[in-house]
Length: 133
Image 1 (cartoon, rainbow, N blue to C red):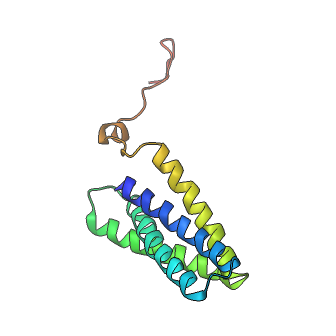
Image 2 (cartoon, rainbow, N blue to C red; image 1 turned 120 degrees about the vertical axis):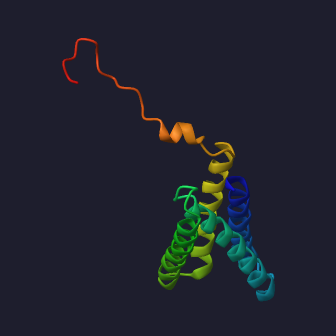
């Protein structure tokens, strides 16, 4: 799930950057709106997947709730920031941030950590002469 979410995030970020460039080049409002809505769809997928990844894989119902709430939180924060400035510039900055985060996630590898690595505590670092037990 991590790789498709990162790909969706990078494509959505590129869409929002392209919408900014198309608006500044005055290529038409319909094109800008279409690219912006495509970016919204792709970034929504990425944000939902990011929210779902915050919960362990055992509780599917909880993953769904956290994913929806995380998407609502990101959407509301974006709406507040957009009210304070030019919406296309805010979208372009957010798209650039999504692109950077997605590329970093893709470069780190597409695999999640194995369950053993998450569940196993680190070894104790006590020295042999320690009396702490």
